[in-house]
Image 1 (cartoon, rainbow, N blue to C red):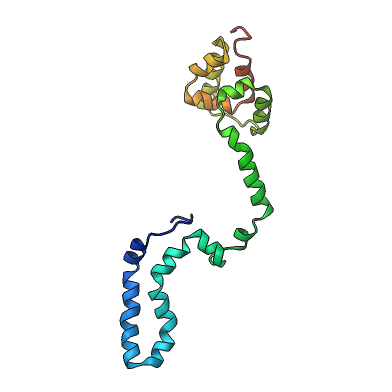
Image 2 (cartoon, helix red, strand yellow; image 1 turned 45 degrees about the vertical axis):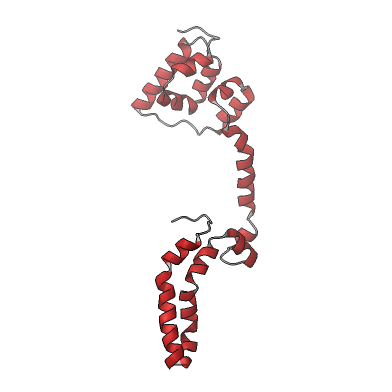
Length: 179
């Protein structure tokens, strides 16, 4: 189920809710002819069925909802502070999404910030440990950070990106000799 606003085309609304309209028109016509008092009593139900295509189409339109103040929650009208901070953080991180790992290797301040966001190390599985030592060996053997990045496969790269010491080693690649 989509939670995003979107306007349903009239053709789809009429197709989806045609039986609702029929269920309103047929009894409404019969009641108007034979029992007008009952029609008045059932009019809220019949009106809802009859207007189903209109309601389905307009309720998905954010502009209509905002204009009428319908189908909104208080947070839509006045976002809480935490939502505003999250939006600001997303906007601030947007330029970082266009960056590459080589930017991380080349920018010491960015590297320091990134390493500061890493969680504390946890006990590694044997497979993770093997990825770690393989990545370390490739970084140590590389003549440059770019060469090391070219040698690392995707799993080794993920291992490097979760390890402050490997990131530091990658940043210093080519400035040391292999053991």
